[in-house]
Image (cartoon, rainbow, N blue to C red; front, side, top):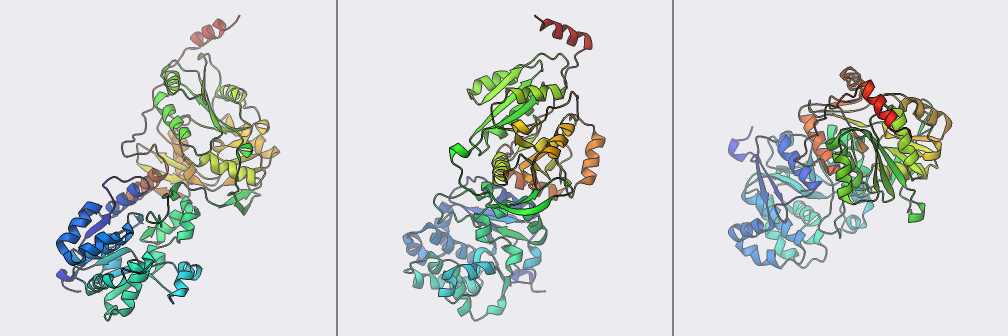
Length: 526
């Protein structure tokens, strides 16, 4: 073991133009603190970096300020941070999956390699004779390591390079490494541990797949998401990007086949069917308002919300009126004993869309839910689309699960004319209707659990034993730090899940006597 004074310091360095971060970078930043609670964390703004260069490299200050591309200043600064302070530097679009200490043990300098697919798919690599490239997006170093000193000394000589990759970036650093005499002092980390996703996978939306991300999380230490904020104009929200292709379960449950489907076709407004999202609610103002907020973030433009409310609390109707949104309609009904099935049928009857989608009042929804399900339905010319997996959240217990494979009734998006009437049942009303729909229609299922967050809050229609059974049947379970990591991932996707979000406490629904319901029913008679 080397002396303690030669160890890489336990400090994480990250930079951004200001102290304000948006998603997904905010969650990426939090992931490093989650997995390194005992490490120091140092966040550098552009102003901080200018002071750093003035103080520790005044001879490079003019070069630093003269760079026409801001990314070059960041490159110089990251090399200087490690030279002066040591520690771990990682870009703000790097997400942490595990504690990194096992990669740093007995090392003086550690850096990751870019994926092999970058070299094989980018002519810039072959033009420069590079078969592998070092990625300065993630580096760890002891203070004063000669590799960083050599990089800083080489920067003035590349100042006139046209391409920033050659001037200060990965190509530049790779050449410095090739010329570095003590290469044995540098530990190169394979791409599967730090760069499990290629830039193409991130930009095509592949890396947004929750199951793929979760598999990478189990194997890799961290992941670079290749946001490319320095050259992609405007910066793109890859964490909310519709993937070009999906694996779709085609056919009926038990007889389906998994097939790749391209869902990226351009859809003009004339090919965008109106989706009616149907909510049945009663005296759940805060929960319903949160579910509606999820609807408001949906990227699918042609949509409406139809709400059937048979409760006594008028706050939801008043709040909807205050929004002034003509696409949110509420039908107020007296609580005279209608079954949940009857209320769902009223919502269907009042809808105007050619497609209908169940939108329960106590669950949360990914902004891409409607768009991905609708695109998959259109691409496969199907009658209905279900999620075969969804996420489950126990807010009070702080745990999450990815459900078993199933035709989850609450996730249905279907052609209105194909949807059977719901039976007159107070609970479980959707199961018979969905079974009929599946038996008589062309249906597809998507293994996209992050599109739907089912919330188990203690006042659901079913009791706790039912949900414990669902927990036991789930294919993936998340508790403790694992659950905290999942919550950070969901915060990237769900705008409502901000740092201040607390799941609304469910109200105790006032019980209405049979006599009172009978009086209300007679009051409606002519």
